[in-house]
Length: 191
Image (tube, rainbow, N blue to C red):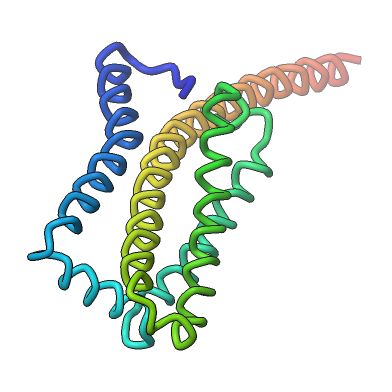
């Protein structure tokens, strides 16, 4: 992102940026490797069945995440010129938009998949697809949340500075206006 932050903050940000981008890939590879060993395969199947069955809160979480994604997307779209979102590099904005859009689509597909579970429940691959899909949903949400938290923190700092500047200008303007009124009153009293 195009944040203006200290050298230490930039280093921390680069580390966080790398973690956001590469940890989901690493965990996904570990998930696939773990699944390949038959000893753990039954656990993945049970978790997948639970996720898309009606007993799990996963569908509710996916529904809530759609609302969160839409809210965050609206936040970016309606940001004004003073907002941090208007100052981000286009590459960062594209990344945030893509993650948000992918999150909406992934959550909608998961909900649809869980609604159609009775049709697909006899297929061996169904729980595995549910595991992978839900892992993607969670990792996408965590990554996107980190970006928004960084953005909103910077946005808050910037808004405070803008409000302080406006307050200072207003105080200066009020002082000048007071002096003008005082001079005008003195002038009118003399005449």
